[in-house]
Image (cartoon, rainbow over all chains, first blue to last red; front, side, top):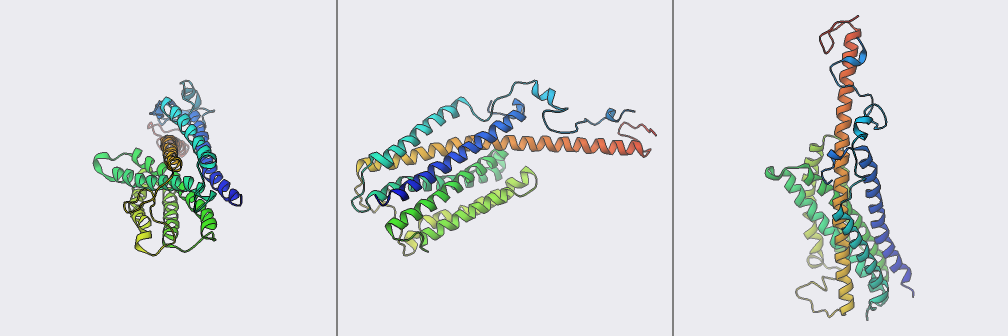
Length: 44
Length: 286
């Protein structure tokens, strides 16, 4: 299938970009969560 | 007089492992930005994204005209929908911030979080559109009305994020970025209607269009709707987490500022004492 590379690259960009964003926000959240007391986290 | 006996609170650093840490570490702390709701939302989002990959790449049929390349449609439309949604939410949140009755930095953080994922998905839209264009039009890029205005919209929101990154207080950041967001959102109707306003090689709305009569295969339509829902769930999950991260970043900034002010007062008090000037407590010590 000639189109396979283009199709897979499209899905890799969408899913890979989303995964990178998710990983970055979770990592940042954990790092900051360890530095701050719970009273600075209204969602808890 | 001991240097640390001034009236101002003394803290030499805001690193939690040093002097000020015991008071902070004695309290139990949550791990991060997650709640029961966001965890369940994350699981549902992950499952729906896996389903998109399965239906988009394997189960949905190929198109009679475009062949296999139609599979790009599912991520292309899903991501551009989220980008539009994100930019509109950014504008609405910015307006809510500027409006006196709903004035809160939470709106500013929602606006910023929403714009971030909007910019990412707009970049993905441009990339997938370019790849799809190579297969459909024979070229990666054309200076077409829809494609060009979309690229311009992307650049505008990159600029919005740059404005958010400028210095100043949280209120200054919120006010100036809210104004930019309200100006930037005007571009969205221009992008959307560009295919009607100018001659364009990009197709018009073919599923949700009022005047179109397209019979889409049931499984293709289901996959398209599934992708739209999955990317929307991801958007909601991200904005919830990211605005909480921003809340913590702002809180840490405020604490850092408080500690820097305390340090400055301590230095001023110390210098005053060593120069024979009255200290903060009114004592004169040589």
